Length: 228
Image (cartoon, rainbow, N blue to C red; front, side, top):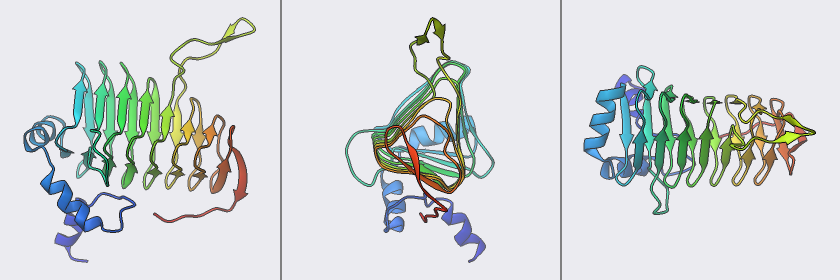
């Protein structure tokens, strides 16, 4: 592969769309030029924003893009709802490599929260990520439609008079597939190469290279592997 081809490949988001080059054309045709140039100039390399995407960035907040990184916001395979990104005061959104966030997806990082997304990962349409403390999503991850990832209960829960933490960090390793409609709850670590079945509720750690399913999610297969 030539050097110029490799550079152009960075503009091709990792998606489950088999016609990915048509996707690149869609990105070009539906980019909000002014907001893309503004955010890219303000935060670093390239933050590419689709027309209609809703943005609210609090004071002292930052989108941190590693050198050579690309963040695509609001480009979809289908569906009209816009993408929404809201960063509270002093929040951090850190991007390494090329990341794609689909239309209809809502990302909220509360005051002081830190959200990290790794290279060639994508968050598919109509998902929700709610970060009050820390959420880390590794490289080459597939977050499917209508997934809900949240590191907080928002309300304080007490059991036998003992309060439980409102927020606990979430860590999702490299090459993890979270199926459509799954929910990932606070304090969870999902190991590298794991697969979370559709509709599962993950409330405890998931070992690497396993398939978990159910509510609560339990290991149903070991030695799993998958391809994007």
